[in-house]
Image (cartoon, rainbow, N blue to C red):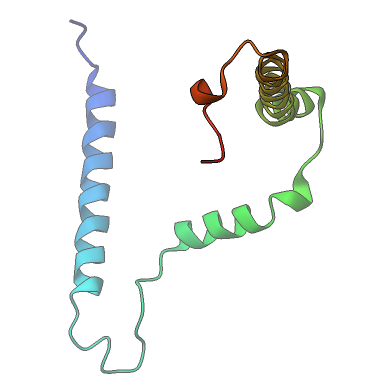
Length: 114
């Protein structure tokens, strides 16, 4: 096991202290009974969440198609749809061919009018 240096340990302790301060402030704001009485209801303002929402909304404005994104779209959307459609069509044609040539009796068919 490797030991962490004194500098890294101090940094970790500072991060933990900051996280605990932020958690305490959030709990204080959430559990304030007078917050709703003064007219400001709703959720606690968190600037990180609002930045994230703004990034999600403006993502399309900053999108640039590259070879990687084109390949990703093709192989995750177009190719599976075409492959599934081809498999469905070939299976249906084979089944229909067996029905029409009499290889499958009417009583053994999956879909029949009775």
